[in-house]
Length: 341
Image (cartoon, rainbow, N blue to C red; front, side, top):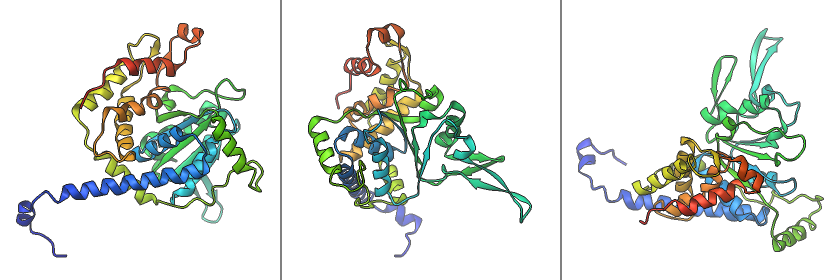
């Protein structure tokens, strides 16, 4: 193809770009929906959790998945890694895990008589931080820099991690023994906190039926899943989602939801500006996932619980009464008016 001169480019009609953008959005949505269907082959039930994980993937945000052992938290991440052709690493967090086991460290090489950097498992595209709250705060803090800045400082050198970079962490409920609560600064770096609950009776029946056909004890197979996208495909999905049109009223709605948490009765601590940003990014991702051409208020509202639940703190009196953070936030979502587009 011959290149256009600046004069030709300026005089060229702009209309063909719109259909091209629309077709790109359509293909991206189809790819995301195919990925959802592939994950559902391995993870039975948990439809909302699957959609939220895909939302975070498209929005380039980190995910914290909480649930009692045996619900398939790790399986979900392994299934996503199987469908993703990029690099995948897993860290099993334990009480004796050191920060250098996460980020890497300098090793003295006897042959060259020099120190060489040995990169840790965080230098990957998809990182599974399994049972992250089994390690003490010192080790948990090893992820702070890389989650926010997509880089790791080793021996005074800032080393970038591959892109895309996504941390999917699992944790057991803090009521269980041997857990260390994550500090607010680290919780705020997770775009979404998901709650994986017990499956419905029909889902559990299908789960037991499928697992007991396997020769691998109580494990579900992820090997039959297809690899649907590479690292460049994820970056393309993220770029397309970030360009989705967003009306100023919808942007204002996301900010109003976040600001309402700071003065809402029953909440002792509200969410910061990161929550507003996450609501907008999550809304765009959900719009792409459903095949929409622009973001609607329901896209923002649909990811609000996952964005806000780990960024607010329940007032002690409501905690004593047995109310949960989700119940209070649901009241907030019901009462903060959404714009009508």
